[in-house]
Amino acid sequence: MTTPYTGGCACGSLRYEIESDPVFSNHCQCTDCRKRSGTGHSSYLTFPNRSAVTVRGAAKTWAIRADSGYDKHHAFCPACGTPVYLTFDAMPGIFTIHASSLDDPSLFAPSVITYARSALEWDDMNPVLTAFDKSPGAAQ
Image (cartoon, rainbow, N blue to C red; front, side):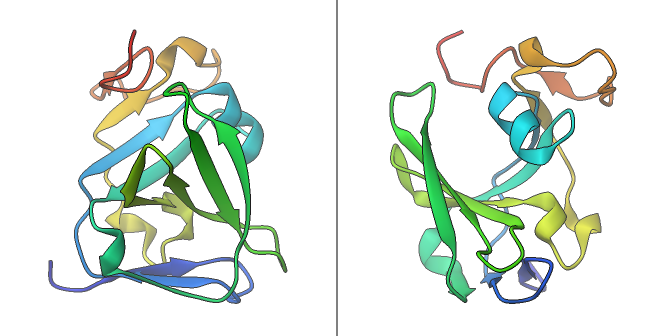
């Protein structure tokens, strides 16, 4: 990695800097992501080492039960409402950001589509990407 991944919310109150490369990049078409994004999917980069992440500013969080049976925590800016990152009880060491929160969104290169079984007909995805009915590794 030559430069850190940086980004944050729309108003600048919540910022992050990540000193590692992502291990997973995806478009997720699950119902939760669709509702939260207000469109057909959400896009994410997942980083393997939460200790390589610096967050400045205070986030508000809410939790929802994932397919794993563990909670996933959605962090957003309390001032402007922008969704910025997620953490997972089942995998406390990882850190996932919303691709749209990047200062340089061109750094996002999706590798897969998750929860394709929930896809909306009008949400066209790149047909080259591997599509999973759920998340890779989850009980299908």
